[in-house]
Amino acid sequence: MRVRPVIFGFAVLLGAMASSLAPATERQASDLTGGCRVRDQEPGNRKRFRWAGQCRDGFAQGSGVLDWTTNGQSAGWAEGTLVAGRLEGDVSADWILPGKGG
Image (cartoon, rainbow, N blue to C red; front, side):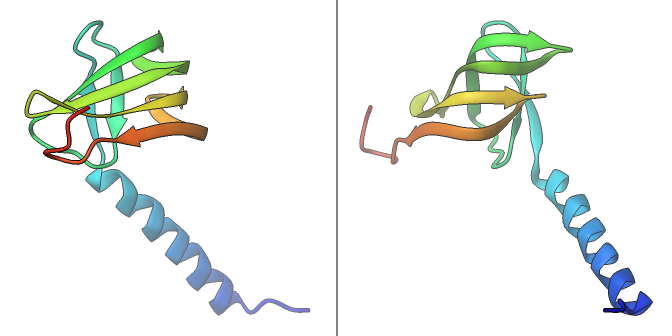
């Protein structure tokens, strides 16, 4: 089967566009306790993080627990592995709906 260069070029272009769009919505935030940074896929001005795990090169790295607050109220937690400040692989998580408490 022969792949046409136009189709291949279009697929490469779409892949490049998708990867360049993702970081635009991402924000780096520092952990409140140790300054270890995480990458927030859904940034909000009043969101704060706490990371119980190791840091590498200033970013959360390895297994641990990430919990966050919004407007000073508990908003959720995630337990899993972070790579360069991003959750990767299997994750256990719980988001707390506004007004529902913890």
